[in-house]
Amino acid sequence: MYQDNIHKQPERDKRGKLKTNKNPVKIIPVEGKLERKPTWIRAKAPTDEKVLDLKKLIRKHKLHTVCEEASCPNIGECFGHGTATFMIMGDICTRRCPFCDVAHGKPKPLDIEEPGNLANAIALMKLKYVVITSVDRDDLKDGGAGHFVNCIKEIRKLMPETKVEILVPDFRHKIDAALDILKEASPDVFNHNLESIPRLYEKVRPVADYQSSLSLIKKFKQQNPDVPAKSGLMLGLGETIDEVKQVLKDLKAHDCNMITIGQYLQPSRYHLPVERYVAPEEFDELKQYGEELGFQNVASAPMVRSSYHADLQAASEELER
Image (cartoon, rainbow, N blue to C red; front, side, top):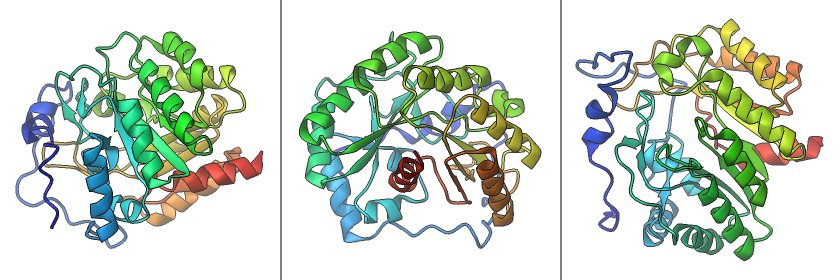
């Protein structure tokens, strides 16, 4: 088994108990074993040789992937296909979102070599489609928008044919400044996740604002009408299907083109508990509803994540245009 001695993950307490214990909605840690998952929730362990080779490459270039940092259940499948969603600006987030397994704390200064290292890794992997996301960096004046731009520019220098999707934070009170910076190097797909319904925001995204996230998507589309906009939701935290349908209406009204909907899975006993496992039939219902609303692509299934098969989603959206 490949042992990672090059890059040490953040301390576990920054991911679990000490990350979520100061949130406005208190989380009662689950005692004993976590609830057994239903038969339709299945993920293969990442043991393929290709997976291990990709991890070595990522470590060599001092990069991070959200696949690992957020404990994505699809890591075996995606890494096995030689694809990954890269997480820039470090592996320490300035927020304490209680659904997320990325560590919270004081981030390190930006690595000015990261854009180049990222581009080199993508070139070595010969990727035709990449997703770039980040931790929240509320400590930066532009929320990290400039770093996204630098990464896009470096990738396009080395791999001009590679499509670049960015999955961005909400940029908090810096939306207009961030969008102005992103004009310098617009992505091929712009993605920002709403994550949940507005009623649950205090619990799920305690620092974020539902309307601001919608505004971010709409403003980006106003500036970049030809670039597809995308968002994602996770189910199983106490929402109703009707509330999810209303969010889909809101997204469509704010010029969102694509949507991903998946089942929330609890990373640890200190994170938000799963209220229920949503049946596959309900995901199918939401897929049909989203298509009826006019979304150009709807990926809705228990194991779907925001960057899962992102290349296929983007390809189908491009065919629609």
